[in-house]
Image 1 (cartoon, rainbow, N blue to C red):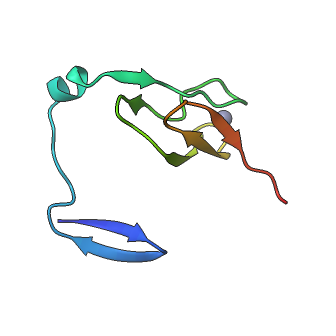
Image 2 (image 1 turned 90 degrees about the vertical axis):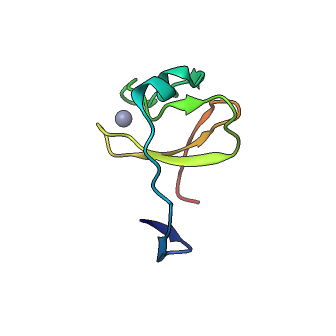
Length: 80
Ligand SMILES: [Zn+2]
């Protein structure tokens, strides 16, 4: 059981949280760690097979970025 927020609605999802071991994580191939443009600390860990975009908030400066998990490019978001 776990919770997932989609379209700003919280849904209860059966089997949503899966537990894996550290060994299993170490076997996954790390594609890279996109770094915060302000702080040079990792925004997230991206593993092989990832595609699409992910919103990531920097733990240090609290700014939110979009990460292209295909190319590992970091995008800053500015007001239009
Ligand atoms: Zn930062």
